[in-house]
Length: 236
Image 1 (cartoon, rainbow, N blue to C red):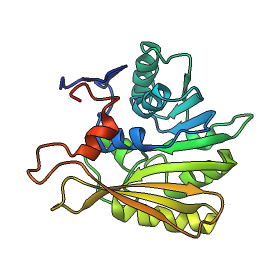
Image 2 (image 1 turned 180 degrees about the vertical axis):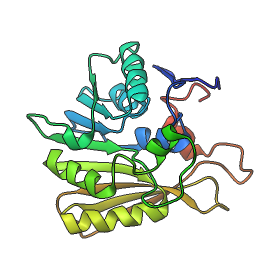
Image 3 (image 1 turned 45 degrees about the vertical axis):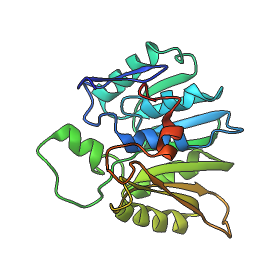
């Protein structure tokens, strides 16, 4: 894979100006998110535009992609502009806390800053992307509740410890967990990412599944992973 770009079957992600590069867990988020009966989508913290482009590939809905970082915004804007899905996606350069619209969204998706209170690196761009410099979990949930339709869903990717923090904050504010996808590198490895889906109504039965990326050898992709990414990855 070229360091500064990643080519999928139907679009290319240039990422030389972004701290957060294309990664496997983000691709799982984009490929696994249900877009059935979804007409309008909001991508919070779009980065390179990866999630917006992945969703645009399999929905006719309109997508608003919001990004606070100037370089990431410019990169996402060009990635979208140069793709075949440019008419479906509008990229906005602003904080989600300040983003306004005349309508609400059927689906809000986010791969947000992971770490709420932890040591930071000397890389300012990485700090903004990984740490809650611009977006706390409280701000994220408040923004989602403001912009999500009554019957809409919010889908988010976080490490296990952080997702538990977010679940507690969301529930207190009236957003309820309905589904979890637990992601492991292989059977012997611990869960390293969780994809959680939230609704505005309480659910009685939480849906939970595990996705294993690799087979026992730790190198060969699992059948489930291959099937999930087959419409995106050139190698499948």
